Length: 449
Ligand code: LLP
Image 1 (cartoon, rainbow, N blue to C red):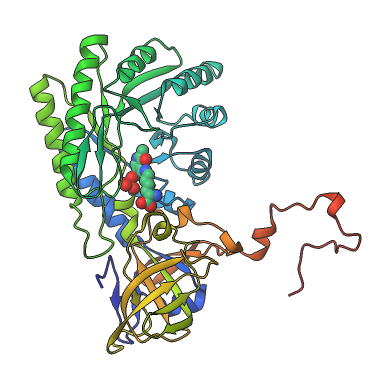
Image 2 (spheres, protein in one colour):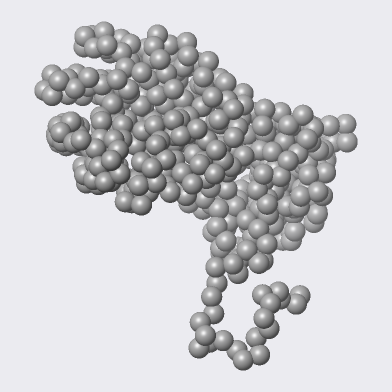
């Protein structure tokens, strides 16, 4: 298996991440456990800044908080000089609670509520990315009520749909996000925005998909966005000063995946923007990107303990772990393919094909099919890498399983950054209405176990 970030096997034959022995981590923090490799996160942030910084103009890296957002993560992102994109009141609240600088906060999303927009305007964040005309009206109203003015980017649907390995261009993209280019909606939205006193239009944003390998998708999208920038300038006199090309760069989950590097991605985008501006006689705008997965994905590893092992001779062998679709729903949702490694015994001899099962009560809760692993025993530790993006952020309490703890590891030190949920956390929001109340119910929530 590919070793990511600071992963290595130590002299005891144990997997180490950030200089921490995963056997010790399992003992000290329990499993399932999300392990975050701080050096890997910082390295990716720095690579993004230096790669985009090599371009001919100004750039800004806006980390997409939906990927993984905790207060400690917000701190790391801040320290590395990135900006932060939030997509809900909850993410905004987390960023504000962590003291993230408001002048580096962006707000995306296709249906921000009045309350969420009020929060953003009151906090004085840098940009709201307005998704549609209805939201434009709402934000204008909210900003005026608060005697304020919000600088906005307008989300445009350029009609490029990127898939993992290729892209297609459609005349008019059917999407819940953004205002369409092809149908004139985008231009209408520019006209509307320019006439509103509660908002100031600064530029445009697009986001063409996620886990993208083919840089041609970005080149195509940049070309269409520049066409639109030129058209908007011609027809409305608006000068676009910021172009936000969204996120989406793919990562390697398994050996079928062949992602482009961050440097090539930055060069492709800058080349497309620079050349495209030249041919259209435009002044190059500031370039923004909103990476998520390509910053956080490879930094995360989930550590599980092996439990039941069930061999169906002639059919398959199931190895069950103490988590599953609750901490990593990507397999059940998207058919994502992960690799895994035995963390507590490196030189464990010959391997056999096993199937890693989660502990939820449904057959679809499988984590990995046909994985070559040494013979496994109850109590072994299994490490699944590449779980930093869209795992904790999409986790659930299905079957009333507890969300795992998360530790940040670096230079041989491990710090707890998300506590493991407790059974009492599960009860925290439950209410028994009085008419269902038992006379003899004890006062304390404590349950004798
Ligand atoms: N900007 C916008 C407006 C987005 O919608 C997204 C992701 C990003 C940036 C960051 O994209 P990234 O660099 O992470 O690809 N849950 C799915 C991924 C959903 C992506 C949603 N939008 C998954 O687990 O694969």
